[in-house]
Image (cartoon, rainbow, N blue to C red):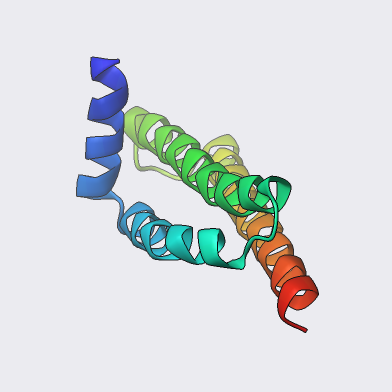
Amino acid sequence: MINSFKGVRDGLKNEEAFRVEIILSLLLTPVAFWLATNYLQLILLIGTLIVVLIVELLNTGIEAEVDRVGFEFIELSGRAKDAGSAAVLLSLVLAGVIWGTIIWQNLF
């Protein structure tokens, strides 16, 4: 448990994208309680925010390990970093689609 908190603290300290995503999650969580009309929607809205944070931390771990090995260009290292970045993008797209769908369904 201590190492888990150290990982979150390190993400907050060293990763700007993680800090931005934490701030957005903290701002959007109350909106989710207001927007959701049932528990399933609430779970989807908050769950996608958590998924984005999880994927960002995993991407940070990949980048840290690749950078630990060296800073010279290695194709496999680049592919690993690109895959991590793509995973973050897909998690953001998922969150956007779910939030957009629920906003559209409940407000329009």
